[in-house]
Length: 105
Image (cartoon, rainbow, N blue to C red; front, side):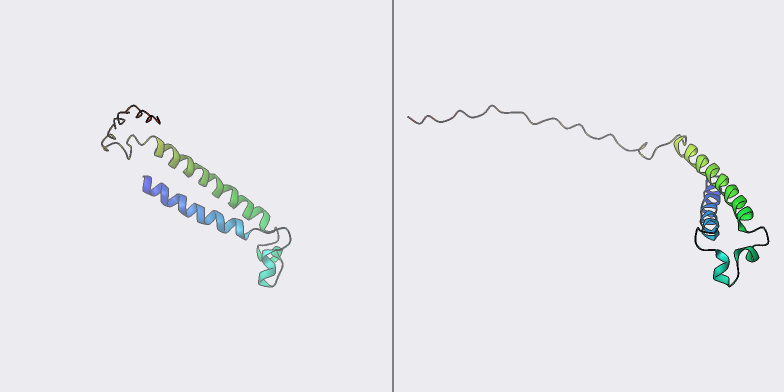
């Protein structure tokens, strides 16, 4: 199940990037690249409604798969460090008293 959701999540990520890149920017239109206006490329209603609804739907699926993967990553029940041996406790070295300073007389 985890692998299936991961595959769906990666596919949705790629699809979301493609859909966002297809949308019209402030100064340029997608239809200008194909020799026409964007209104004739995506129909008379323009790309706003179709691509906007697709972006919303894909974003919802992306968020749901993200939450699912995050929840089950935390509540897996096992840890990577579960079978590791505990770190050895090191004893500090004994501190010797400082040597007396030699007399100069």
